[in-house]
Image (cartoon, rainbow, N blue to C red; front, side, top):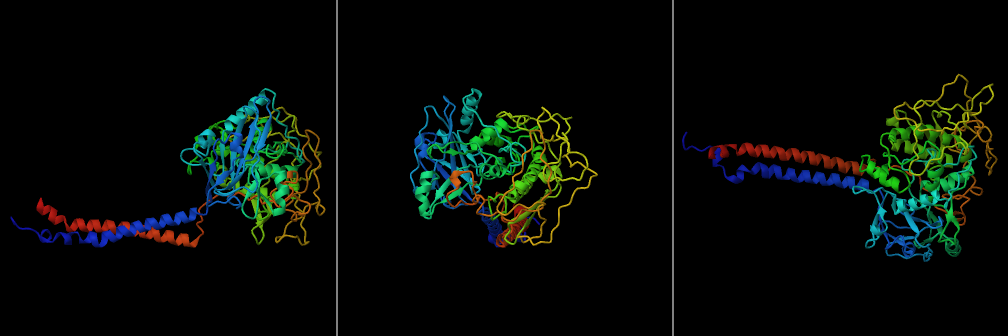
Length: 628
């Protein structure tokens, strides 16, 4: 009727908006509260990761900068083995080609050193490179004024840092070293032959790499009970050893190779004079990479895009991978051939083969981390297993993890075995191995090349009446990387019966029942494997299904150190912690409960707010239509 207003239009305005005030506002508060709880729960999960900041001193590439302690900010403490940071420098004299090492000191921010760092004497025009290691998860570099720019430091890309790894001026150092090598002024020593008859491994050997290869350093520090630190030199060991100093170790691939794998295989690391320790020979990340670039035979393991440190968030990043590679003397990646699948295939085929081959040697060597594994063999097997999963190899290769481990009541790995032994691979002599030049070491094999037949490696016994076939001599590089378009190589089938491990009913000094080696070693002694002649494959032996009894500590190197390294032989040495992929702690029931409550509030609040808007709109529809 004209002039008639609806009842809805006559309602006061505060009643018209009552549904939004009564229901919508509380619902909106609940939604925001749920969002806050969810974020708090996730923050609590991420808190398990250890991330800290290291302050780089001014002019870090100079002698004064090298002798100035780096400062580790709270909440990290340098005396805490789980959050300690490490710095390593390598120096090249372009005029003479001489190469040397210096390990700058790290102290707590606001703290002092237990002994003043030694000031190095650098040659004129010296080229200095710096590398960083971290026992936590994420180490972020901070500058003292313009020190990061002055040092040409790289911590990652613009979106994310690498994690445990960083470097300053590394490409320039490697360029100077490679120029000296090309000019004949610097000679990189050969690898030598290991006790298994193969060339000694490098940091680019698939038998050594893990989920993030070529990371961290070989630097060690002296730590006192009061939390102060000092450079690990002979003079400081003599002075501070009486005060209970211990040796702190960076859990690195390089230290694992130099201090543990090399002594077990009868190899020696590449060393150079330590400018802080009166010229005593010392190892370094840069030395390992130079030797690997010069002498590692194919297939050469180089940092892949599946490396967690090279990812940008959860996504592979070619640009970030190239940044990482530049810091360890590796050429930019070729995405067409150097794929995560190819890396996994070589890890499975070549890496598992080398670890299994060296079992009889590494099972008698002390574990780098006795809390994780009871021998070097079980440590390497567990490390391989973690890397295989972390790199996504089961999905890429459609092959499950080949390693099965057995732990005791304390979670220590006491036994490890490969479910399906990998196919045998040739054992090239150093003379026939194909060297890998720096920055161009990845050389795919011809597609039609067939694997060279050879005798089975150690621990692949077979009953046969045929004489052992000698390996075919060839000038082609052996252990070529698997093409990504080809299926993963399967073990060679044979109709010859494989000898089963000998079962024993005797009690073993382990909390699990295991098989004994066919020829158990004498207590406290390691039986050396006789190296075969050049061109011969190692003789087969009985498979060992478990680690031997824990090594006698009186005859084995101290945990974390190698018996051949004088810097690790005097004092108590920290364990080298087994690296594991970091992930949110979803097993925490409190975090799960808080997350669940947050999700319910967020969803319920959102729905309630939407309902209140709809009811308010319907309640005011007549008012708006009447006014129109």
